Structures are given as C-alpha cells and as structure tokens.
Image (cartoon, rainbow, N blue to C red; front, side, top):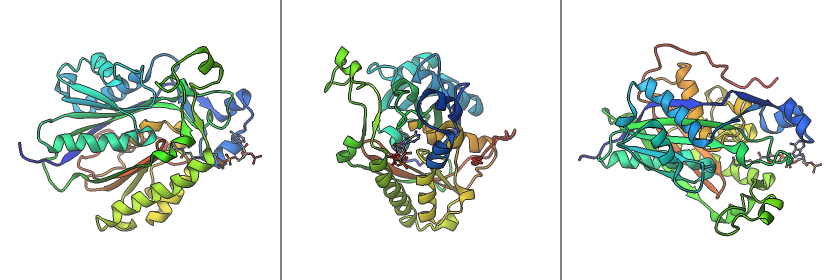
Length: 346
Ligand code: UT7
C-alpha cells in the first residue's frame, strides 16, 4: 500500500425547493431586507420542510454518484460533517449509508460546525493517503432551520438548509489533488456561538425547552471580529507556505457566513472579487454545506478547470477554522449548466 495523494473526482449538491426570502422574514420578525442584504449579503435561503439532514446528504451523494457514474456499493467510507445530525446517535453517516445502500462502507460524523467540511476533507484525504481506501465520500450537510428560533432576528435571518458532497480517490497524477491543509481550534471561543440544550450538560427537560436552549445562540459582533482575522490569516498562511501569491490562486472557496467577512479575506489574499465563489445571496449560511455547495455549482457551470488552484477556507463555532489547498484534477462537465453565479444584490 504505497502513499497516494487524494484528489476530488466528483462533486454533488442538494438544496430543498422551498425558498424563504428576506421579504417573508420581514413578516415573521422585526427585520428588513435592506439590513439583511447590506450586513450579510443574503437575499434568500432554502428550507427543508420534510425530512432531515440525512436527506440533504443523500441528495448530494446521489448527485455526485450520477456525475461519477458509480454505485453506492463502491463507497468505502462516508464522513459527514454536520451540527444538525438526524439524532445524537446513530451517526447520520450510518443513516446515509443505509438510505444509499452503501453496504461496503463504514461511516462516522464529525462536528466542527462551519469548519466541518474542511476538517472532514482533511481527514478523508489522510485516509486515502494511507492507501487503504479508494473511494471516500465527504459530506457537509445541515438542516439549520431545525435549530433556529424564528423569533430571534440575530440568528434566524442568517442560516439555511443544504447538503454538498465530494468524492475523494487516489490521484493518478501526484501534481493534482489535496496539496496542503491547516486546521485550528480555540475552545475559548465556545461561549460566543453555541446551542446549550440537549447534551449531557443540559439534558432536555421542559425547562430547557422553555428557556429556548435548543436553539442557536450567537454573539455576532464577537464572532465577526475573530472570523475576519482567522479566515484571512489561515488563507494567507496556506498560500505563503506553498509559495503562492494572489495571482496564482484561481478560486477562493470561502465559508459563506457573511459577505463582508469573505471580502476582507479576499482582499488580504490579494484576490480580485471575480475569483471568489459566492452564493450566500441565494442560500445564506448552510454551515457545513457551504463549501461543497459552491464547488458543485461552480464545477457544473464549467468554471473550475483542471490545474486550477483553489483555496478552501472556513471559520466557525468552537472556534474552529482552517484552509485546504486543492489543485483541481478533473475536467468540467460535458453539459454546462448556467447557474446564476455571482452576487446579485442590487
Ligand atoms: O458561520 C459561523 C460563524 N459566524 C459568523 O461568522 C457570523 C459573524 N457575525 C456576523 O456576520 C455579523 O455580526 C451579523 C451579521 C451576525 C450581525 O451584523 P453586525 O453588523 O455585527 O450587527 P450587530 O449585531 O452589531 O447589530 C447592529 C444593529 C443592532 O441595533 P443597535 O443596537 O445598533 O440599535 C441590532 O439590534 O442591528 C440590529 N440588528 C438587526 N436589525 C434588523 C441585529 N439583527 C438585525 C436584523 N434586522 N436581523
């Protein structure tokens, strides 16, 4: 079993049909479209009305398998990054395995909040590198609407539901694939973004429900300040240690928490806005799904070319943050789908 570099050989995504616009939120909570657009970049988000996070993941993996032309029985490992598992246990990865009929796979969940996908991609690529596994599905999926308080304007306007997935396989060509990664955690940031109820600290009771402890709490301002620094720092770090300047990077694939955070990160990297994947306007913050959702849409639109340098970068609860450098190794699809890519915020 020789050491092999991992590469992304397929991408997929799934978004629910129901759209929740800023204008609709205006009727639910004391907010307005202008505030949401100018402070975050979000116009609308998707809501999964029926089903759970595993359904978002299954949709994304099915999309990926169709594009790759493979069956579920070929999958060796399923890693699911999520903060909204179907339930505490069994793992959502096991639920997805069952729904797909991926009989030869083992699977587990990983919780690194908004950085879940970059964490899971890093772990998945290490498993490929050992030579022991040939096809690893890395899923980022979150049904954020299941933990949102739609009377709290600080949080309910920010998030949406979606699933994204990539397939990792050994690269036939050492020059392409997952080139480098750098992950960080700082647990002292845990007090600024959390969900208190339901765990072993505060098991579910009538009181935890009454006190709204099963919803997200975020001190937005505190998180904003460190997110800007953390995402920019780690993106710059991964560029520097691979001798890349802004000119060498073809795409920044950022976690979509706030357009202003993304802009600051791109500026520090010396990147033109045209090289930044942005779909926060259409989906909001879908937590672990944001990055694979971008990859899937941009690939389908024929925008990611073989040989492109991609910096995937994220910051989230924990705190957790990190970046992955990818040298893209697959061709664009034969049929290009013209998504409405790029921010349409006017
Ligand atoms: O993905 C995981 C990591 N999370 C993040 O990276 C999120 C980081 N934080 C943010 O993106 C921003 O802090 C938010 C978008 C959450 C908030 O933006 P902000 O510019 O930091 O606003 P703020 O919280 O400082 O609030 C400014 C004002 C306040 O009013 P006063 O006190 O100035 O009168 C808020 O009460 O805006 C008010 N406000 C709203 N107004 C209308 C807060 N939420 C809303 C709202 N609609 N939804």
